[in-house]
Amino acid sequence: MNKTLSYVKRFFRFLLNAFTRRLWLKMLSLLLALLVWAYIISVNTSLTRTKTFSSLSVESGSVTELSAKTLALATDIHSEYAGEIDVTVEVPQSRYAQLTSDNITLTPDFSGINSVGKYEVPLRGNSTYGTVTRISPSTIQVTVEDLISRDITAELEIVNEDEENYWYNTANFTLNPKTITVRGPASLMRSVSRAVVQVDVSGRSSTIRRGYTTVSLMDANDSEIPTQLLTLSTRASIVNLEIYPKKRLEVSVDESLLHVPEGYEIVSVTVQPDTVVIAAGSDLLSQMESLSVDVGDVQDFSGSHSLKLLMHSDVKYYSASEVTLTVTTRRTDAEGEEDE
Image (cartoon, rainbow, N blue to C red):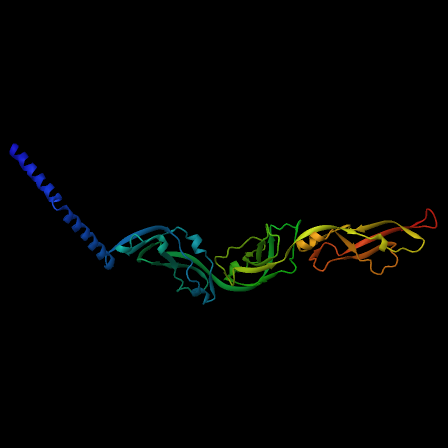
């Protein structure tokens, strides 16, 4: 028993010496081995591993293959097959950690399609760091229709306007470009009613110059149409839109300028409308307190007259350009008799 115990002790002592004697040399050897192994992995691309990814999506692919044949894809592949595809990639050992799902693209192969209809097309896989060896499912179903093209004149639509305090010159704005060429599958193109350029003017108190604004396509019910399957000549338009502050002013009349026949005197003067809203630059508005009528060459103001307002040339908008002036008179040489 003592002899056996002695042998065991000698064995463990031998192991301890083997691991601890010249420890620095052993550590150096291990480090060199690791460096050599890392070098071999980096230069020898034949050393590969497989990596599997689940729930990948399909890109729409190159539709130029179809458009060259006046055909268009009518299936939103990216949305319909989102998260539906599993892929296995054979990747060099040195690139294994770098390979992620972002490095993999899946696209349909449209090369065999030559007419409208429903097709089951194969998927092609590509990876930045390796070779796609398996795609499941390997095919997807798509619908192909005739390719239709239309030119649509864009319309301006103002959003969040403050009509109480600001005037927007919707009669004289510019869109560049104003005409949008839209191409896509026949069924979707038939639903396109108009093109709209929406301008959000919330918080805007001055003219918009060269505003870069998205173009939206609308159907007959004014619902926005998704454009994933459509090709637009431009998806944004440059907008120039005049915006000026408003102010409500009273219409004033200088009665000394209102001539009536001899023997009559003015009893009352009324103006309709008696206030007018104008829009102009803020500096000009701050100087204007009221509006005056243009009496012109009227010789007798008795009764009602339609008269123009005297308006500064820099006023951009006014709610009325003329007013109705009503002058009530009475005779001064016959008490109690009145003319209106």
